[in-house]
Image 1 (cartoon, one colour):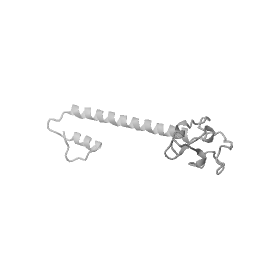
Image 2 (tube, rainbow, N blue to C red; image 1 turned 60 degrees about the vertical axis):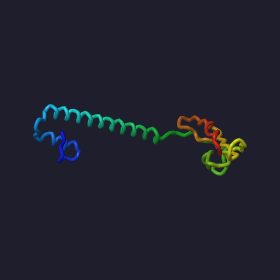
Image 3 (tube, rainbow, N blue to C red; image 1 turned 120 degrees about the vertical axis):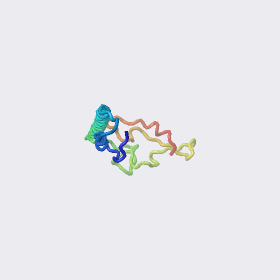
Image 4 (cartoon, one colour; image 1 turned 180 degrees about the horizontal axis):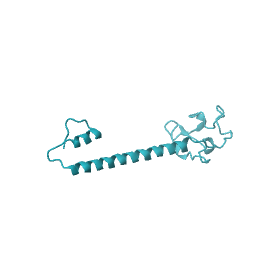
Length: 132
C-alpha cells in the first residue's frame, strides 16, 4: 500500500494504517506493527551496545595510569629533557644510509621511545626501515 498524503515517518505510517482502505487486511497492520517494533528494538539495542562500548573505551583510555618514569640518558636528545624522544623528527633519530634515496634512515632505539601503558617498550624495528 502507499499513503500519498504522509511524509515518511513511522508515526504517520501507523496513522495511515488506521485509515480505512479497500481490501486492507487488519492482520497486515498487526504484522507491520510487530516488524516495526522489532526493528526499533534492534536499533535501540545496537545504540545501547555502541554507547556502552564508547563509555568503557573512554574509561580505559582516559583513566589514570602510572607511567613508568623515564630516565634521561645519553641516547636522548638534549634539546628536551622531559621526554627522551622529543623533539621528533630530529636528526638525533637518524643515521646516514647510502642505500636510501635521501641518504638517511630512521634510527630509533626502544629506550628512546615513550613507555607503553603496560610498562613495556615499543619495538621500533618497523620504523627503522623507513627512509628519513
